[in-house]
Image 1 (cartoon, rainbow over the protein chains, first blue to last red):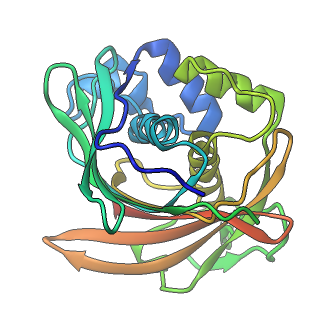
Image 2: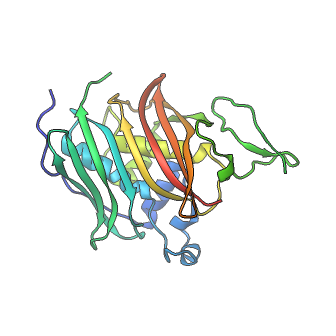
Image 3: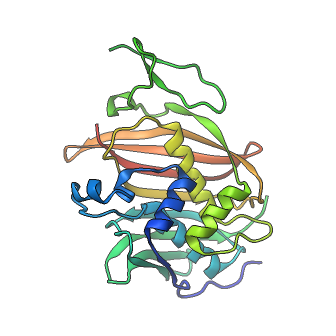
Length: 130
Length: 152
């Protein structure tokens, strides 16, 4: 039986770097130069290499797992990528219980500088393993 | 330039081919139609993949079940590999994820599949929603809707 849900998700941090971008690129086959090539990135509106957006999303998934445990399943996670994260920045994933009855959280990933990178809504259901 | 498609086969993306050169041709907004499939491929959750994930997130992989964070990365690999070549400058705008609760073990072989869910023009931008699913032994593990602003 699934237990009660925490009012807040346990914040989880990740410091991005050229090394983590390179590893994540190998992991996902996403070798877009916007993530690595400073000269190329300088010619874009971002001005500098940006971390893969789904790297922050992966951190958010870890944050959710660590916070609610295996008794709960992510029925639906809806997020939008609000602002790119520059390589070298530290991001923090977290969330707050918004509707206990319907098991809905407001979730986010912010940079330590206070910029919101990801924002969205999480809906959970008790896990029923198949 | 006339475009033909290569035959659909497991493990192979559905490619556009230039009729003259037979080289893969760029996927553009006009190619996408709701319901259109872009094939499927196998993604094995092997030790190399899990080591990379561990190096990125600084987390131990564990002994049994794989983190949903690993599955998100696998979903992205399926999406990126099955839709090639793509124009530079696409923007991943938003994402919906849904998990079935099925636990996936280390070493599992997943099948990734991609299809076009929707497309539309809005504020002079080309929006495309792709549906990506991961399954193990025919049972869905997770799915995701990737909303992109397609560059061309």
